Amino acid sequence: MKLHEITLLVNEILTLREAVELHRNHWHQRTKPQLEETFHFLKKNLPPGFGLFYDVNIFAKNLEAVVYSLGSAYSGIVQEDDESDTAYLKHFGHLVFGQLHNGEISVIASLPFVEELVINTEPEIVLATLKPAELVQAKILDLFRDFLAKIVEWEKNLTEKEIEFKHSVYA
Image (cartoon, rainbow, N blue to C red; front, side, top):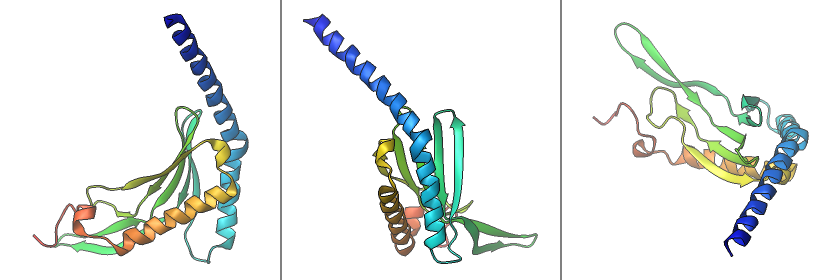
């Protein structure tokens, strides 16, 4: 019977709406503070001089992200011409824990890139999509380790084709 199928779908929608509220509450009460606490744990225990920065990007209420950034610095690449020199900035990568529309969390690794030198400025890899309750410290540390492994792999295996330079040295 069609009404029975409709009723089942309506009940599923109500359950999903309730889950969104639960996810959002968990994010604010536990997940976001756990991400900050884990950041401080990492910062305290990683070698001195390793750049690790914390930020919260708030696009809108219940649509925000916590960002672990490896920072940026001048890349050492300098374009020289008669009038001036242009030094290019390299971003070392970001690990982003962002709220989705349904309250779940998308974990995205943004790989290194050199500003104004490449077309695909921030190659991104989705590492996981999780419920906020799943983001406990052990899981955050696993994701951070996976992020660092992606950074190492990226830095070791760059080719001009992969990063799509705006200006080729081979032209």
